[in-house]
Length: 188
Length: 188
DNA sequence: TGCTTAAGTAAACGGCGGTTTACTTATCTG
DNA sequence: CAGATAAGTAAACCGCCGTTTACTTAAGCA
Image (tube, rainbow over all chains, first blue to last red; front, top):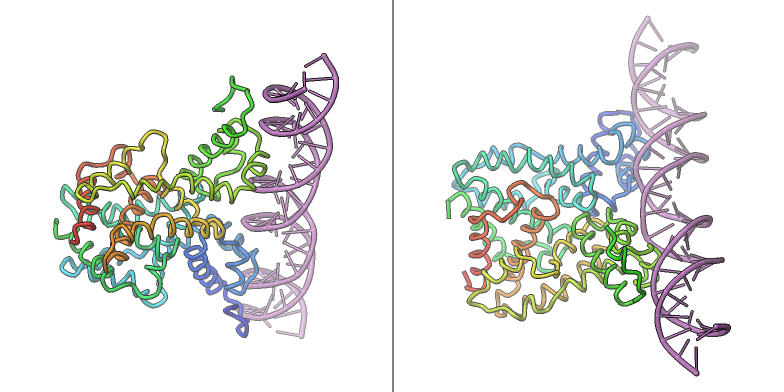
């Protein structure tokens, strides 16, 4: 389980990073309320006290985990002609060790403090940049459409897993997702 | 606040119903983990002990609240020609005192026990009936599309409210939702 | 009206879990 | 190799909150 069983060198930065990675994993799968600090630190192989020491508490760790998962390139990198395909690829193939922020966001939705954190970051780091990237009069509705479809997808893949979403994404469903996202930029 | 300040007659059935209604309200807005039993009973104007007495505990109350919100007519009533319009109307105009089950479901997603309850009811009472109603080979994908769009919508209306979803639904967004749902039954 | 039973309450209990405190151990520097 | 300091730990702490217990009060019934 522990990441550092045979690796006891002391490195605060690395330890913080390991806690953060474990937090992203646990928050996104078990949800904020059900994710115990002890669960997270067990995966990172460190003492629970370090969460308070390094992050200032569970809520701040949640904020940090969410912030770290939010990658501006998610939006700035996009090619409008390949929007649908690119987004779906990023959603379904977890590039390296980078984790999707949306499951973490959703995981915080059932605790009011965590929800406020998630709302703020969601607005500032995802919705508004997306709105700006879409541009034009319908930008807000486009951003809303994007949020609805992507969030609904993650809700049933990670939060309330339904059989239909288990394993690899059904090719027909995947195709629908691609066209759905592409339609947003194509003004349809 | 209390529903029964000047109404102290004793009626177990009615009391149970009031607790249930309060539970639906609180769970759907604050989330399972953040909804305290004392919050719910304060709204119903009764003692916290009654939750354990009448429902067997918080988790069972959650299950009951969800079950009560699930109305089979949500699906069986549907007219295929007006599917999109009907569904959106039901989502946006909370018919009488009936509450939407999806926000309650989502609210349980960050506690593993509540999540299992929500998953089971979601599958048996929503997904599978919907799948059967759609019929045909693509039924599963259609049901998935329905779940994705409706859940995404509620996520940002009730769970992580974004400004774009505040107040009345934007007419353009509403129109998109209607066509989106209609497209599912129209095999598009 | 008194007796029984159900409805409801007040207050205490207990454990889960985030956090704090006091301590131990490794690393770095002269 | 000290000595200092940062990294990490073990264990206790304590508040929150779901639940239980013991009690009070209202309704039904002869």
